[in-house]
Amino acid sequence: MFSIELLIQTLIAGVIIGVLYALMALGITFIYSIVKMINWSMGEFYMIGGYLQYLLIVEWLGADLWWVAVPLSALGVFLIGYLLEPVLIKPMFTTAVERKDDYAIVVTIALLLMLRNLAAALGGPYQRTPGSNLPTVMLGPLPESGARFAAFLCALAAIALFYLLLKKTWLGLALRAAAQSRIGAQTAGVDLFRLDQIAFGIGVGLAGLAGALLAPVFMVFPTSGVVTTVKGFEIIVIGGLGSIPGALIAGVLLGVVESLGASFIAAPYQNVYGFLLVVLVLLARPTGLFGERVRQA
Amino acid sequence: MAALLETRDLTKRFGGLIATGGVDLTIEPGEIRGLIGPNGAGKTTLVNLISGLYPPDGGDIRLAGQSLAGLKPHEVARRGLVRSFQVSKLFGNMSLRENLLLPALAQSGNADFVAAQEQATRFLDLTRLAPLADAPAKTLSGGQRALLQVAAGFMAPALKCYLLDEPFAGINPTIKDAIIELIEEENRRGITFIIVSHEMAVVRRLCRRVTVLVEGRVAAEGTLDEVAARGDVLAAYLGRGFA
Image (cartoon, rainbow over all chains, first blue to last red; front, top):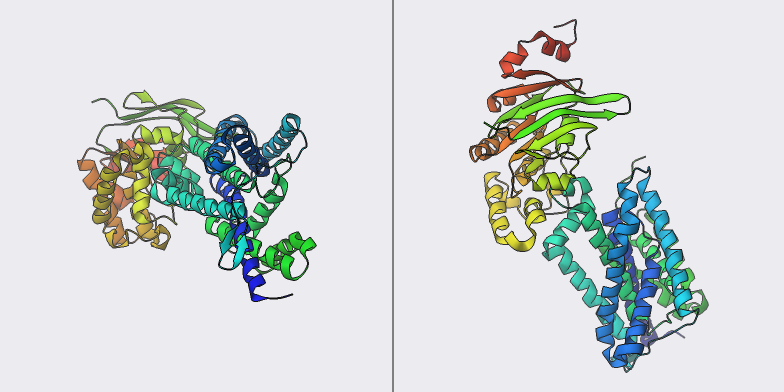
C-alpha cells in the first residue's frame, strides 16, 4: 500500500544502504584508478573486515566499543592489503610477462579463493554476528535501525576523510596524478610501486570498513562478501569505472532503486531492480554516468 | 671541468633494431646542448634511456659521477635529472598550481610545502599563467600546456640536468619566447639542459654545441654551423642524392 511515509522511509533506507555499498565501489574504482587492475578479491577483504569486527567485539572490546573496533578492523584490512600487494600483485608488473594486468587480475581471483577457503578453514561455515546495543533511531516519525544508521554516519565520515586525503595531502596529489598519467607521475619523482602498495591497502581498507560497519546488520561468514562485491561492480558500471564521484552517486542510486522496487513492486526481486538499472545505464551510456571513453579501437 | 652527464657505449635494442647504438655523450655543467637528427634517429629513445623509462641493454649513464643505469624514472628524477615529453604528460584534472607542486612534493612530502608553494607562485608569475593558477590544466591551449610542463620540471628540488624533448613543437612564437626565456633564466641559475628539437633557429639561439644523432649513433658534434657544414649530416637529413 503506497503512503508518503513508506516512500520516505524507503528512500532513507535506500540512501543508507547505498552509501555503504558505495564504500565498496569506492575501493574497487580507487584501486583500478591507480594500479589499473580490477581486484576481484574485494569481497574477501569485506569479509575479513566483518570477521575482525566480530572478533574484536566478541573476544576483546564488547559491543559498547563498536566504534573503536570499526577503525581497528579497517586498519587491519589495510595492513593485510598493504603487505600482500608487494608479494602478490607487484611481481606481476615487474617481471617479464606480457599482458601484466591480466595476470594481476588472475592473481586476485586466486586470492579470492584462498581467503575464502582460509576463512572457512579457520572459522567454519557458520554465520556470526557481533551484535549491536544501539537503539532504534527516530528520523522524524520514522524508525531506523541504530546499527544501520551508525554504519551510515561512519561511512559518510570515512568518505569525507578519503576526500580530504585526496585533496589536501601530498599523498593525495600523487595518487590523483598517478590516476591520470602513471608515466607523468613517475618522471615527476613519484615512486609508483610504493603508491600502488598504499592504494591497494586503502582500497581494500575501504572494503574492510564496509564489512566491519555491516557486520551487525548482515551476518559474517566466508562468502559474506559476495553480494556486496556484486553491488560494488554494479555501482562501478552505473557510475563509470575510475570515477570516484560516480561511485558515490551510483551507490546511492542503486540503493534507492533496490529499496523502492522491494517496497512497491516485490521484495523477493530486490536484486533484479539493480540489474535492470545496470542494463538501462549500459543502453543509454555504456561508459557509465561519469565514465570517460578512452579506448578508441 | 668534470662532466655533469656522461653516457658511455649506451645501447638499446628493440628486437633486431638497434635504436641506440653505443652512444657516448659528455655534457658539461651549465651547458645547453642541442640534440638533433632526422626523424627516427633515436633522439627520444636516448632521452627515455637517460631518464630511466627504458632500461639500457648495454653501457652506462652517469650523473655527477653516479651511475643511473637501471634506476627507475622516479629515482633518476630524485637524483636531479628531469625530463619533459613531446606530448605533454600534464595532469589535466589537476590545477596548474597542483601540476607545479607535484614534482616538489613527490620528493619532499609535506615537509617543504610552504617553500614549494612559493616556488610554484614564482613559476606561475614567470610563465604569466598566474591568472589560471587554480584552473584545471586540461583547459590550457597546447602551447600553454607545453609551457607549464617545462615549468613543472623546474620544481624538482634537486634539479641539475633537464632533458627537454621537443619543447617548441607546434607552439606559437609568443609562448616559444616564454619557454626560451625560462630556459635562459634557469641556465643562469646553474641548470644544465639537453634540448631535443627540430627548430634550428631556437637551437642556434640557445645551444653553443649540438650533437647529431643518425640511426641511433652520434654522427657529429660541434657548433650548429660546424655540424651543418658536414656532408654526412646533410645526407642524413636530406638523403644521399641531395647532400
